[in-house]
Image (cartoon, rainbow, N blue to C red; front, side, top):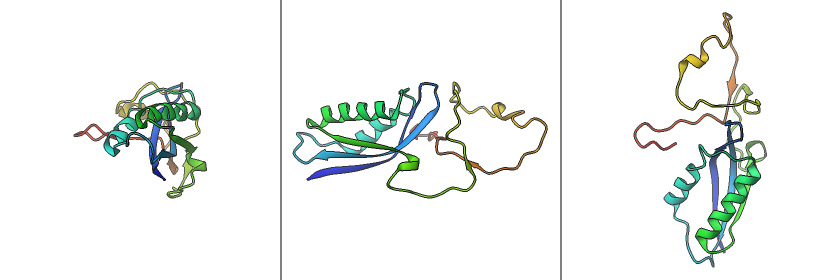
Length: 142
């Protein structure tokens, strides 16, 4: 048997600082020397939030290496871009802006970034993103 974990909220930064997200599945063999405790696992996964990684494959390889070392047995990790995730959650209205090729260097709240974004024109459109993340002001956790 095995312990199977579904990762619904895995995120990291690409080489240009843009947040990236994936859904994943982790399988830990029942014969492994150690269990992976859920709160520790969650904190470990959250540590990727501001970590730059070159690709989804690099994140997957890092997870396999770290989790296998922790479990004392070979752990299987499969990551899926959201569009290919087997566990589809919901379709959001509007245009998804996640595929924009942008560089990000500011990760703090700054309403001034929106000033002049549309010039003097009033714009009405529906956009959505899976890349936006908020941190609890009390616990500092996502």
